[in-house]
Amino acid sequence: MPLTASGLDQKLDRIRAGNYGPKDFIIADAKDGDMGGGAGAMGIEPTRGLAHPASVYRSAMMEMAASGLVDIMLMSLSSAEALAAETDLAAQGVTPAVRLNEGTDIWGFRGANYRSQAARPFRTARLDRARALCDLGLYAVTFYNDVDRDVAALNAYSEFRDQASNAGMRHFLEVFNPAFPIDTGGEDIGIFINDAIVRCLAGVASADRPLFLKMQYNGARAMSELAAFDPGNLIVGILGGSAGTTRDTFELISQAERFGARVALFGRKIYYAEDSVEIVRAMRRVVEGDLSPIDAVKAYHDHLGKTGLSPSRSLQDDLQVTDPILVPEAQ
Image (tube, rainbow, N blue to C red; front, top):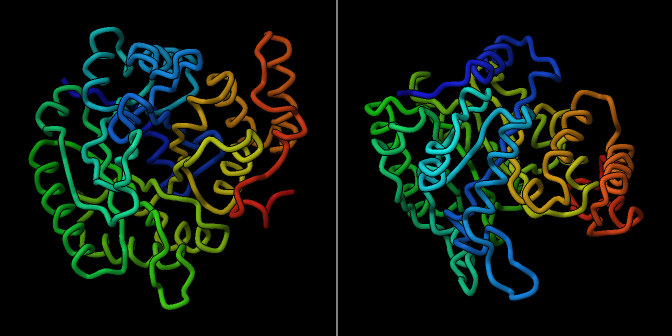
């Protein structure tokens, strides 16, 4: 049976119609780390230095789904099967989604060096197996300004769209920045990525287009340009990247929303937080204007103190902006 959370669709409809309000901001918990990071993505148990079992990761998914704070739970197909046997995400108002490809540039498991090379398209998950669990999936591409690499990526994406359409699978599109510097002739990488995305999708009919994008935040200028380009057809979302400080988390979601993003899909910034549910609750308060990023960090630390959780950093250290792309707009 298809599992579609009407709340997500209603938010997307309001965004496309130009009726967006901060409560319509979409948050996804990206718990698909095993597709790129293997067992190490589950986190490392400090005493023995070994990865946590998958059950720890999946328990965190169920806890987050029960919180009512996220709209989408993004998983590997194996995790989606495991969770389907334990809980009904859609009944909790959460749309289940499955990562449907894993190009080699996300193969970041322990000892691997694949990210030093340009990505090769690759897919493990079968669409029919995924479609039995949900009707939404993630497809990812990376553009290198290399005609052979980029044509290969675009052809693989075209083939995927045809198969997804036949299977009745909707998708959202993740566009990575290259993991290493590329030659853009002096043009800002964010602007190069914007044009690559628009060119990629310009010939795609509405029935086959992604519901929204998942991409790196490349600063206010690039975000403003892409978000304003075709808002009825191209909804921009951001990925979380590395864990960073708590201030980084709140600045990222605040700045991205301010400059036009309508979706945040965070993995490590949620999973590696001292209290995953509370940090998402604070993210929503930041987006909705209840708290500034600075005040949200202070409130989060106050919560940790009251609940007896030890913060990973001192409050002073956690108030620092460490991601250079966020510094120009940080208040």
